[in-house]
Amino acid sequence: MNGLHLDNIAITAGGVPLVALSAHIPPGETLTVMGPSGVGKSTLLAGVMGTLPAGFALGGRLRLNGRELTGLPPEDRRLGILFQDELLFPHLSVGGNLAFALPARLRGRARRARIEDALDRIGLSGFATRDPATLSGGQKARVALMRMLLADPQALLLDEPFSRLDTALRARIRALVFGLAADRGLPVLLVTHDGEDVPPGGRVVQLGG
Ligand SMILES: Nc1ncnc2c1ncn2[C@@H]1O[C@H](COP(=O)(O)OP(=O)(O)OP(=O)(O)O)[C@@H](O)[C@H]1O
Image 1: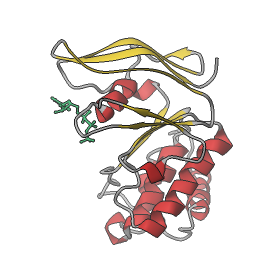
Image 2: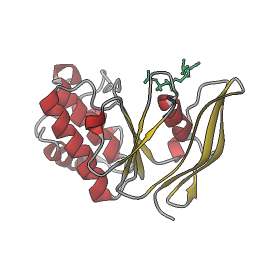
Image 3: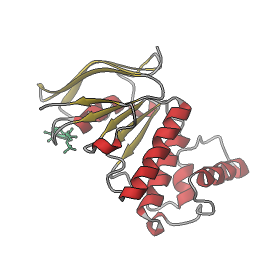
């Protein structure tokens, strides 16, 4: 069955249960995880990504569009990840940051055209050679979002991705993310403290408390 399945996921830290969840996120839908600080929201995303710290263990099964993720290395999971603190690579230009997500076989003119098209779609035409340090917060957020999408993910994992943006920008970036996810039929697992981030009609699970 398509979508992201978390079947009886249970994460332990040093053998002690930390967080547990069972859920199915159909294509194009968002499941929002909320809960108090320290309850294990980011750890849950790390479990899905396959990047749990040493001493943490994941039980249960993860499936994405019928494909078993459990046991796969993070780079083979086809997950798009966007974090609050996610920074663009400072030593690469804006275009270089986007190129990082493109397949190596795409070269030369085709590669440049793909990057220009991507910049155009986020309203940043002509920004390819810019140093990321010269961008505003919202421009950086759009580049990070596009870099995530260029890697052609099959699901999105978002950890407080909007929290550094001001109110107006927040609404725009939020609409861009959920619009693209819906268009591409990507399941989204979102962690946030802000109920405003929950897309209309989206499901919410509360962890702890
Ligand atoms: N790398 C790590 N090594 C050891 N313990 C960790 C590590 N990362 C997180 N923890 C612990 O795991 C627990 C859950 O942390 P996590 O970051 O998942 O919480 P959270 O719900 O995302 O919190 P917040 O809302 O503050 O971001 C906390 O007790 C935290 O101290």
